[in-house]
Amino acid sequence: MDIQKLFAQRIGGQQFGKVQQTFKFTLINNAKLDFIAKNPSVKVIDMGVGEPEEIPSEEIIAALDREARVKENRIYPCNGILPFQESAARYLQRDFGIEVDPKTEVMHCVGTKTALAQIPLAFVDPGDAVVTTTPGYPVLPKVAGWLGGKVFNMPIESRHGFLPDMRAFEALVRKERPKLVLLNYPNNPTGATATRAFFERVVELAHECSFVIVQDAAYADYVFDGDFVSPLQIPGGKDVTLELYSLSKSYNMQGYRIGFVAGGAPLVKAFALVKDNTDNGQFIAIQRAGVHALDSCQGFLSANRDKYRRRLERVTAILNKAGIEAICSPSTFYLYVRVPEVYQGEAIKSAQHMADILISRYGLITVPWDEAGPYLRFSMTFEVGNKDFANEDEVLEALENRLVRDRLD
Ligand SMILES: Cc1ncc(COP(=O)(O)O)c(C=O)c1O
Image 1: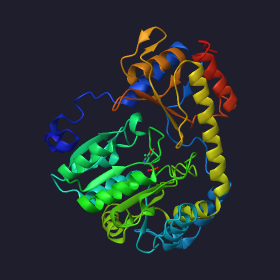
Image 2 (image 1 turned 60 degrees about the vertical axis):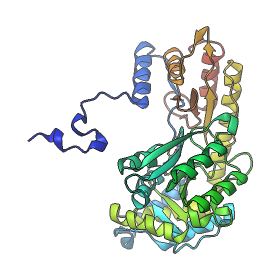
Image 3 (image 1 turned 90 degrees about the horizontal axis):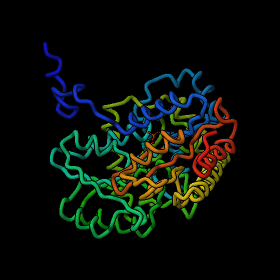
Image 4 (image 1 turned 180 degrees about the vertical axis):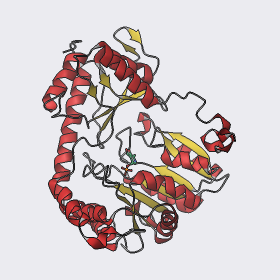
């Protein structure tokens, strides 16, 4: 039997595994290994990884430990437990003034990545249009494409505050009549926030042109300038929105795989149907640890916020000192920096080129994005207190030595 003939076209069909693909993260990792081989005594500064570098609070861990021992919590959780939905609803009300019915307008998910992969199954038939912003988190468009959907990318650029160009967006949705429009504010990788006026217009268009807004709010808790805004705050917004919230970034719970989807009851119901057929729900002990986080860990979250904001400001200052123009992000833990046209006398061809220079010359890892102009993403989740760097000051001192003084310590 020729196994090769069995692979679906969506993963490459007969070519699956035979074509050498160079993924961005593989290139970064290869360059990192090369730097370590050439400079064994120099510590790598990793600003590539986009996930919290510390463990959750002691209280969250204690809640998980306690709940894991409760016999009733062992069962398949399927579509979840009401106390988690109630806690999610309390959080939306308390922090953002959003009212949802915990029974019908909230559903937990096994991390928002999984939810983003499940949502297209509820809406996208072959030939259906889906609109997404680019650069962006690729999961929903990838799965929509796998289902035969037609994916349209809207570039987000600094001249529009990293929001889609509204005129182009309106023309696109009127012409293509998408079923889903994926937005992500606060935005990864640009660190941009949306405005209320933007969501008002998108909600209006969603009603007029009949599409669902899928708003990925994984970074909702990390807005430093102004407030988090949501289409669920706009009159009529709930009817046309599925918004995704994650506990990963806010409470360092990324390994726990817990988040939730909120929106109009029929939309949540459609998501829940797909979910019920594709996963068995998150362990109840983890949902209960999530309740504890959402209800009682504001202090922990606010310490995280202070740390990332401070790091954003400090790294912005160092980059500017080094002649790499950077503007501090108003949200998320990412700094999105346009690469200079010329760096140290060398013409820079792309973000990938600049990222290679920073790794090979300075052992500094960033993530390049070339989708809408050449940019590097610096993540403020770099690790400290390990064998490499004792604390934040040491990392930033090393960064300054390398970028500003051209000195490898
Ligand atoms: C924009 C965005 N959405 C969703 C996710 C997935 O988060 P999780 O599945 O941990 O909730 C991430 C993770 O990096 C992200 O950056």
